[in-house]
Image (cartoon, one colour):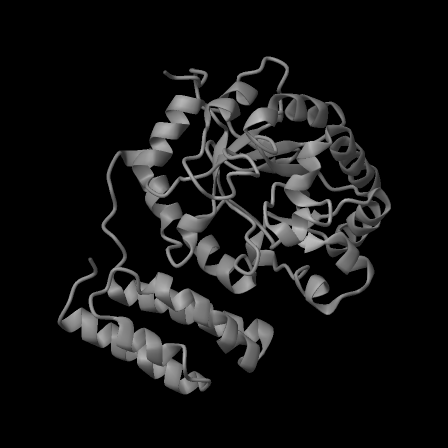
Length: 341
């Protein structure tokens, strides 16, 4: 069954931000969506990106890690800064802080399912109290000149899927766009994302703001299928971009031509990994940049046969020149002898 509307394609806009006919958004991911990661995604076609979510309380306390997440760069634009919290005053104050850093929009996280966030009454926990969600969002809207958008889920659990009410009420108070992950909080990231309710929101005659779908898009074919079936204004991509920023260019090419691009060469994979590494070291300092880059090597090298030895070497050295040398060794070895699976 197809839910989407038919007709000529139109440019998608959030307030005055032009995003193209079918924008691809990079999801905000904790400990992933930092500037070095965003740089390789932007280079490969992400139309709109978001920072990692930032604690409103952390911003107010001037917590170093929270403040550092405000770092954005001109080449990233358009970009949104995402905040989360469960207190109206803290959210309002945080919105003012974000406003001063001059992103293109402010996004509110009402979808994070992790326990440490939910236990604070933030993220997806707010789905249990739509009145509170409205108050928190309104506090932000009143405190910033930026367009305010929201990322959320279908509901708290299977019995409380309230996204249709949420969408109407958030639009009514001035939210400029809504990104919906097709799972409940109870599902976490398990099971299949259900896009049927996302489609109902999009096709609600009352809804005029852009609706972006999120969840399980990991191939160009699936992107086109969901675009046509559910009629969303664009797609938000999260986990599929980790170690594979080419997902954006592959989807765009397929939507435009119907052709599947060949996968990135080993040279392209190593080049992107090195750029990510260099950006991580430049932004975080050598020690932390090297340490936090370790979580990404497995994704960049995924599918290469017998790569475990190289991966182990990459995550056990603290010396940047040695890491660079290992990556070049990987490139030479697999370019000469093996092909990516």
